Length: 199
Image 1: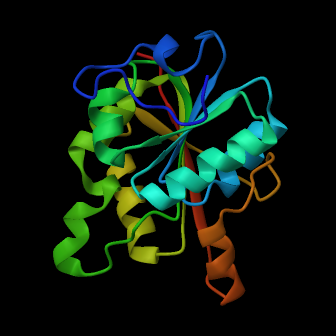
Image 2 (image 1 turned 120 degrees about the horizontal axis):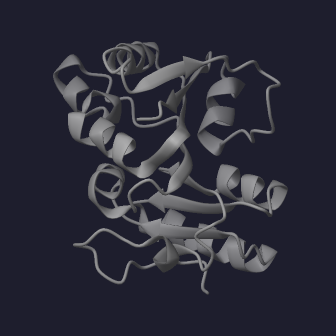
C-alpha cells in the first residue's frame, strides 16, 4: 500500500476497502491537509486509526506522500482531489469517524462567500452522507466571518448536527502549518465541533 492514494475510479463512490485494507478501523479525513503536519501527527499518535489527507496542490501532495513513506506510517495516505467533490460524491457512505477542516480558504470577499465549503449545501449534504452516526465534523479557522457562516450553516441543520464542547485540552490535536503561521502574527483561531445525530 503506497502513501499516495489514487481512486480506482473518480466517478463512482469508493468502498472503504479501496482506501485502507481494514474497513473496521476508524477512518478520519483531513480535508485540505496542506503540508501534512496535522495528518502525520495524528497518524503517529493514533496507530489504531486510519487517516486520509485530501489536497489539490500537487507539490503539497508529493511532499506529504514522501513524509508518510519516510516515517513508515501505514495508517496514513494522501489523495490529490478537490475537497467539495471528495465529500459530496467520492468518499464511502457512513464510513468516516471524523472529518477535520482546518484553516480552509476563507474566501474573504462578500461576493465570494458562497464558495466557502460551509455555505455549500452539496458539502453539508456530503457530510451527512459520509459521516457515521455519531461521527464528528471539526473546524478551525482564523477568519471570523467564515466561522460565523459555519455556525449559522450547522445551526440550520440542528436536526442533523449537534454542537459539542471543545475545550483547549480536550484531546491530542496537532497545530497545522497554516494555524501556526496565523498564531505567530497574533491571529485568534476559532474552533467548533459537531456530531452527526443518529437517524
